[in-house]
Each structure stands twice: as structure tokens, then as C-alpha cells.
Length: 472
Ligand code: PHE
Image: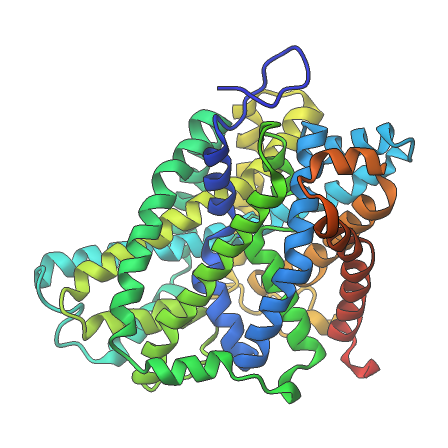
């Protein structure tokens, strides 16, 4: 099943174009869409955030996505090694590989807290499965229990440090299993089975949701543009969410790009990936906010939004316990196809660098991320006062979970993207880039303009006004 190899030895890789698309869409679509997007949209006031987010995806995310997959495919290796090869072929300093090393670090940091949230999903699968057994198939979820009880499920999970850590370990162990088996037999298997299942379930639930709940209120909340709400902090949050959601700036898409065959048009597939990812995020918003408003909850409910509002919505639905169970199983599938990509970036790097076997590299990454994730899990309870970076304004009042989230999406990802844009736009030789991008004519010119000028300049500006709002 190995294609795309430039050397004599066959490498492990995607078995087909559709396998790559599913795996890349699988990486992009995940907790970022279902959990983080609604939470960020709510925390940043709705419409202005959402529309700026869409702009970021189109003008910054998409060109960077193409740049990352292109680097991976041309370099045919782990992310830093791919960058080094292209720099060398272009006669430039090989130090550019640091750009991808930062990315690898970023992927590792995201992995550590991502698996904590993955653990919450496992918990809700358990809760709904139990409910299904006790109330039967036809009724709504949690029959007869007040909404407050359902909302209280999450805080009570957050209060239980041991359980949070256990669930985190369970989720990362499942991720480990698939990544240690390799690209075509592990990661690809997850993507080709679970992503289609995800889309079918998601569509059913969204259609259902559109007919219940406060749909029009949610529409106007998400899509009314109020320019006065577009502050530097909101812009930085929107850019960060675009990168997080498209898996950019952390070497993940470079790593996946290295397993793509030469026959695949990278521009076309990048468009499919970004389009699918954005559609799922917006639909997730349209699934969650109607329920939030109908139940009289606050839209700025933070990390709890998906875990608190949806279960309340499932209560009033016929077959609510079944639908609820299916929903969280589906979110679990989406999360797993993302966490394998997060684990793959540092694993591929370690495998190259330390010349260890894949299972060994996977194990080392897993154990390290597991330990860091424990700190994140405990920041909701036993270690809530541990705020080692609180003296930095960007991390004020944040425990480890929030620090990891903020530093990756608002610092490492934008910086990784700036470096990628500069590398592809200015450093790498045009001949290499032209032969990989799958674009021609006017579109190629537009892309090159975005990568050379708009992406770096816009990102530097947003980083500055986002981190130092007092400048404005
Ligand atoms: N894009 C994934 C999501 O939205 C998370 C992710 C980030 C995956 C970075 C890989 C790299 O859930």
C-alpha cells in the first residue's frame, strides 16, 4: 500500500487519494469543530467572530493548508526533515527546519490537552449508555430529571480529578493503539471507517435539530456582523480557531502530506478539506446554539457548551437517549481521527530523529503527552490554583489546561503559519513549489500573493493587536 515514494525503499503511505482526503478531513474535523468552535464563538460574542473566522479560513487557512501539504509531499519525510530537504534543494540554510520543529512541539502540546477533552466524550458516552439502559429506547434522555441535574454532570466530572485522569489515559491509549500500527493499517483504517460514519450521524442530528429549538435566534446570533465587537482579542481568537480547526501551524498537515501520492492535486484536496471542516463547524454551531437559546442558557458558556447544552436538548427529543448516545459516539470518532494526527507528527519526527521503531516512538510520545495531560486534567480540580504562567497577561488566571490551549492556538500556530508562508513564498525555489501546488494561471498568482504578502502581514498584525491590545 505504499505510494509516493521517491526513494527505492517503499514507504508506508495512504493507499489512495480518497484515503488521504478522509484522513486529512479526519484530522481537521474534530473537537475543534464540535466543542471548541461553539465555545469560542460564544466567548467572543458570536457574529463578528464567526464572520472573521470564515474570512481567515478562506484567505489565510486555505493557502497555508496548501503550503503545508506541499512541503510534506515534496520533502517525503517527517515535517522538519521535509523542510530541511526543500531548503537544501533551494540552496538555502537548513536551519529553516526549526520552523517545523516548533510545529512538532505544538502538536505534542495540543495532543496533551486534546486527550483530556476526549476523555470527557468517553464519559458522556458512558452516561448516555447508562441512561438508555434505564429509560428505554423511545423516551427522551434523562426522563423526569430537571435540566439543572443534566447541566451539573459536567461540573461533577470536573470535580473528580481521579476520574478525569483515568478517562484521559483511556483516550490517549486508544490513540496510541492506532498510531503505533502505522499509516496505512492504523491511521487510515480509523479515517476510512469512522469519518463516513461521522458524517451520516452528524447530518441526521443536524436536520433533526433544525426543526426543534430556537433556530432563528441562533442564526442571527451567529451571523449578525457587529463591527464594534471585532477587537484585537476577538481577531486573534478567530485566527487561532481557524488554525486549530484546520490542523495548521503544528506540522500535522506537513506530516500527512508526506504520505500523499504524486497523482493527487493538492490544491483541489486542500479546498475539499477546508470546505468540509468549515461546514461542520458552522453546522455544529447551528446544532448547539438553538438548544442553548431554547433552554435559556448563556451562549458564553465556555468549555461546557457542547457538553451541557446538547444533553439538555436531547431530553426533549423523542428517542433522545439513543440520539444522544449516537451523538457522543460520533464526536468520539471525530476526536480520534484528529488525535491520531496530533500524535503522528511528533511520532514521525522521533522515529526519524532517534532512529527508533514506530511502536517505540509512539510509546515515548504517548507517555510524555499523558503526563502533561494529567496536569491539564487536574487544573479543573486539585491543581486549579497552579497557574505558573499567570504573570504573563495572555495567561492571566489560567490553569494548565487553558495555558496549553492558549499558547498553541494563539501563539505557536500563528507563528508556525507565518514561518510556513515565508518559507514557501520567499525561501523555497519557485520551481519546486510550482511543480507541487496543482494550481495554474490566475489562481496560482492569487495563492502566491496570499502566501507572500497577505498571510505574513495579516498574521503579524493580528498577533500584535491580539496580544498587546493596549497598542490600539
Ligand atoms: N483540527 C483538529 C480539530 O479541530 C485538532 C488538531 C489540531 C488536529 C492540530 C491536528 C493538529 O479537532
